Amino acid sequence: MRGFGELETAIMEHLWSRGTSSTVREVVEELREERNPAYTTVMTVMDILHRKGWLDRERDGRAWRYEPTVSREEHAARLMREALSEGQNMKAVLMHFLADGTPEEVRSLQEVLRSLSTKGSSR
Image 1: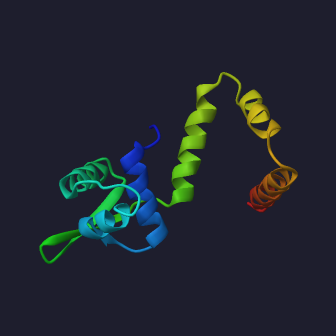
Image 2 (image 1 turned 90 degrees about the vertical axis):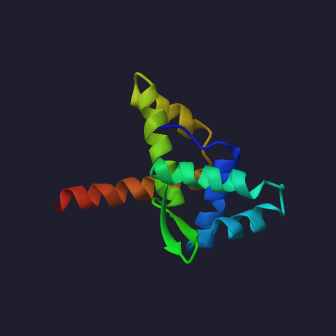
């Protein structure tokens, strides 16, 4: 897996932000505020994202309504897992990643680790 391309990212961000399904036309109209993509280009990219498993779709009259199959956070977690698996030493990769973290980010991570530790010990 890899990150999305520029237009794929814009489409996914629209769908994640919206929180509900969208037609190609709705996506094109929103994207026109930042860029001017052709309807057919957006339609093709959304179809590709559907075939790759990133979007579900259902018929709405003559149009398709699309929605993401994973949340923005799930996608970010997948990218992080992939990045962590690239290194020979996961601990070293995490240390380099966290070295630039703010104190608030470190506290948040500690809370998550405590929560996971508590869940693991209650099994």
